[in-house]
Length: 179
Image (tube, rainbow, N blue to C red):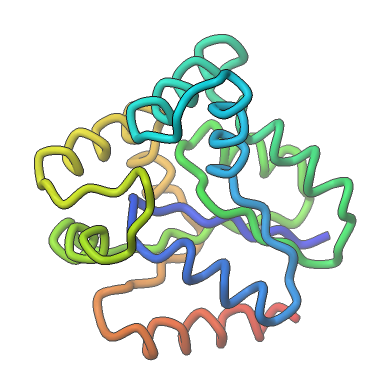
């Protein structure tokens, strides 16, 4: 099984990458969905603060690769020839996936702070923000999980600063080369 792991800051384009994979028939596993599910199971509202606290609590109790472990179990159940894991937040998660899957590639989706903030203002998720200070705090929280280190050790970097069509064409070409 070949597994592609997507690393990126909030609103960098991880979801668009995943949507493209789904459209090509590739199963996608979203790490954030696991955290959101755990947040709801804890009886909490799906806010950025609650989701962040759930992520912190999971990692504090089970280690920095806790969410990766939960995700890997779901990927293994599917047993597809190619799968995408969306939402890697730390270098410990990349290491976990490299140790779990013989053929694992980490892809960093890169977008500037300004581009990401602009996207957050329009995409409408419950944990989005239009405030620069809030996005900076969220970035800092995710960097505390090892996001910056994960980006630095990614095997592939895809820039997402231009128009949506160009980015999606690049993602499609990358994934098409793996099918």
